[in-house]
Image (cartoon, rainbow, N blue to C red; front, side, top):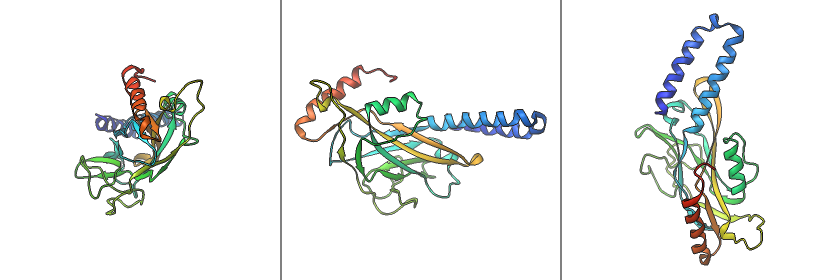
Length: 237
């Protein structure tokens, strides 16, 4: 479990700090830097898409999605205010570049204009979860995800407005390629300040591939693209 690994990290960190005088001024900073790298890697791997957006998405249509930060209840308990998660549409090329960089790079430009795409990352002590939910509901969601929507106020009583893809920028196509063969993804991103050492970590995670359509008559071809991709794409890409 992620929580157990964090506990091991804390124990080792305390032991290293206690032995600081013996380690010397050269070795101690290198060890602490390595500790921060390990913690950052663990934290980034615990940011997940809990509810995937629909894989065929029509512009001007509401949709729902949620992300979960598995280590949130443990590391963000003392945070003064919740972090805000953004959702941005990216092209297949951008998604590949982000994945190849192990999410170390940041998004320069979104390929689509999304409305109401910022939601608070909230911790629910009762359920022990830390979620950001892009969903038009009031109160707590199933599974304990909060419903704040970027106001910075945990447990905001107002329902969040639905997330909406307003328009999409198409890529240049080759030959007879159709718009329904063009895949995108939603990039969820946020920056969290971790309690131990006030370490700032940028978290990013991609949704499953999405085909964006503008008319209902494109639905079948878009579903065919998604079906083929889900069945035959490489697992690691």
